[in-house]
Length: 111
Length: 114
Image (cartoon, rainbow over all chains, first blue to last red; front, side):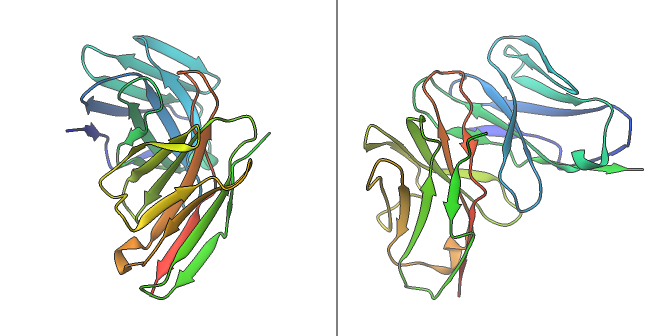
């Protein structure tokens, strides 16, 4: 089976740093994606990791450890507009395979 | 920036009726997907489509569902006889060639079955 776990909710303060963790147990692994989803809107792509290590993209970074089945998304200099759900998704094989999503982490940024 | 567009944004239908949800993927994309998200739950895969045929489908995608690419731009999801539990947000996604390429999602169609 496919299992992707993320915390349900997190709260952080404007200007701070927050780390959202994701652990996965899947039948295969061919890359991990992070998406941002504001309420009632489409998921929008944030980052992609397929090799171990850190990928940095402005205020957002994502880390992957394949041996541990673990990833995190790091958000720096938090802004109110970062309040959203953050979805961890795994592609299990190469080719035209779908993404398997976690339930998402709802992040609330407070003043 | 090119976008995946979906119509309608909201569809209200009586149980047992047929619905067709429409999507226009990004023009140079080759791989197409439908996902659904029941309110408060995770995004779930329905079907993937490439080279004018279904590549993979989930257990959710039973005989009531079908997909079609009737022309060079549209990609549709049809539900033949809707049930109350089909109420959800339906997202279309597409991606270009290349294994590292992310899927880009449309804004979704909120389907409400009465």
